[in-house]
Image (tube, rainbow, N blue to C red; front, side):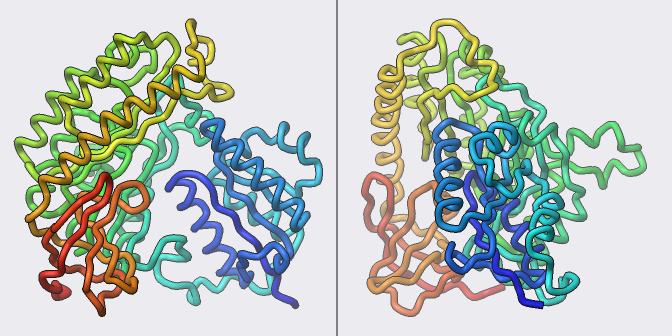
Length: 441
């Protein structure tokens, strides 16, 4: 039987990337060839994003292109929850499935191009197929979300929180480390909520083994790789993670989506905590772990946001002194509760506020980077280039933060840990000189 070739397009967030990796792993196990060329593919799978309108537009563009270039297309992912709309707009689609639905995707593939043989899982690399470089990987610890944020439709796309069993997460992490992964990027919709859904199922006898973020991260930290946490809501129990960072079990880095600082806006968003609570928590974290790097995301121009409330957010940034920040001008999302809130702001106002916030944060980030000049850091090499190497310290996550550029450092290879001294900075990135290599443990 001729082996079928499958084209694959992966869009969206790191959680969607993990979904893509799982589908690709299954395809490879069943003998399919994966191609990045439309012309070579027997059919194309598009894993879509459907969270904000710009992501929807990108997904629709990818579907249109795949249909034009190949003609045989399966759509999956978050936008797939709008199957009726997609099938009306693109009646030639082979199939449309929702997120986290690998069985349905594979069933559609089988119907069009039967597998050449039964799955050969033993021929796959440890940890399965990855879309990231060999030395780092995303580790998804749960699916879904229990929050009802008014600007978000993730619960309707991906369902309520379902935490993976600790043993399954640790087994995957161990396989990744054994395959050469040096950094585990822990992701989910709400990483802090890991295990909350399993509390009612735990007896006192099994309490020590229940799913809990502190227990899980402590165990992950013992595997010998960097462990970096993303999408951490500012719950009180996050305080328990800071000692693990001081001890070296976790990287001193937190990605905390505060979203705003004004209490009224946070209530309208149905977000936890308040600006004052978050400032105190940030201060306590930094007192305990001075090397902690913090990044966050914010939404500006939310319906009803006044100029004074926006200014309060700018004041929060000055007080919080966050290392990295992303900002989004509020964008109505089909199906979101916030669409019905009164006093929506004009697009020009929303975009102007986004620019103002990023200008304020650019100065803060530049100042914080300047403070690092002359200090030494352990960095992980991401790329070897003609003039040296591109790397990251514990303060930089791949793809969203800056990098450390090491000049005049021939021979460095991706995945290598080295010690550097910071020599300079621009608005986003650092420059450094190589001090020494770090022997593998």
